[in-house]
Image 1 (cartoon, rainbow over the protein chains, first blue to last red):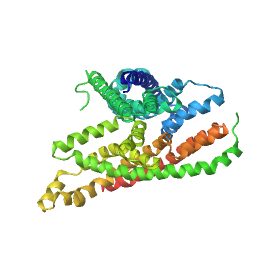
Image 2 (image 1 turned 180 degrees about the horizontal axis):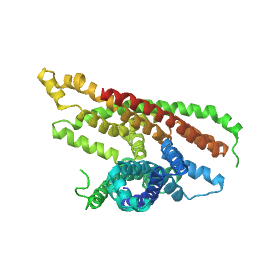
Image 3 (image 1 turned 90 degrees about the vertical axis):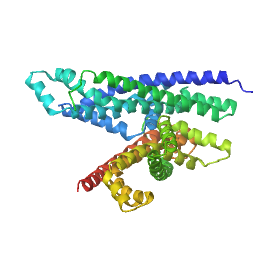
Image 4 (image 1 turned 180 degrees about the vertical axis):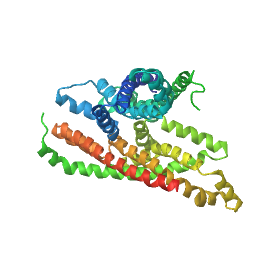
Length: 219
Length: 220
């Protein structure tokens, strides 16, 4: 008889690492999304080009290749990262590139008349973005951001391949020790799905909050 | 460590060998995904709730869990119940089912875009349900969704390195084995990145072409 409670503890420890990675990766992705998304709308050609190169590069290769590159190649350039750092960096930069397109699309979706009204009211570029455009663009971004966060959560499974002890890694450990395959993998599938469901519920709540006070602004 | 071009040329045949498997897996996976997506989309529209509800839940479940874990599941769990698959077959099935849940949404949107009148006309001319699907609805629904489908197939191509985790000898795995035997990581892993970047940039250009062609056809 196998003592499952010990193994469940192992998987839950892994779940904690997965949550940690998802939260830190999402934070980095959010920063990168706004930096690159607004960068693509910049009036300086250099910034626009930098943002475009970043976005195309990270969307053009897969998270797996980026992670391996960060973990195995960067050390030769003198930058040694722990698996956790490499994981957060790769996940955040990768999902951030997808998020940047969302930011750009949402900002572009706000009508010209809003920009013109800001000019008429003599608002500067910063105030225009901060107080007029972004508050309206944010509710448009949130649903896709939610999907991106779920993609990031799913991406975290890949870090198990660079020996980070996340949920998938621990399931492999349990498989190796018990010889049972169905139970560990079914357990983590359910846990991943529960996390994804929690993210989409959280995003729906944020959507309601962000849309508050915007009634009647858009159709 | 320095970048060494001679080493790059030396490993190139091995990497191209892997690239072949990567492309093969992508094409087979795309075929499975196109088929699975269509079946899921039609099943989800079924008037029978005993079919549409469970299918909807399963699709959401697959979309909410990592592909890597699903690949492990197919590769390690199925042999316990007597289904033994080769790594490549397991990988193609995993990719196909995972991306099938995404393409199902594309099909659903495409099918919803076919005007109601077309269904009614099909019924009025006494076509059976099957005939209405095959001869009236799908021929109108599929062309506008080709760019969106192609988009997911490009995404799938970028996920194929995951197959290396279940021992498929594709591009990533060849690069890793070269790296492990020569202790040189820079060239193989970077070349994998370059291959993926080049192929996906080319496919993005092809996608633009598809978009142009099929949106124009739509507006005609």
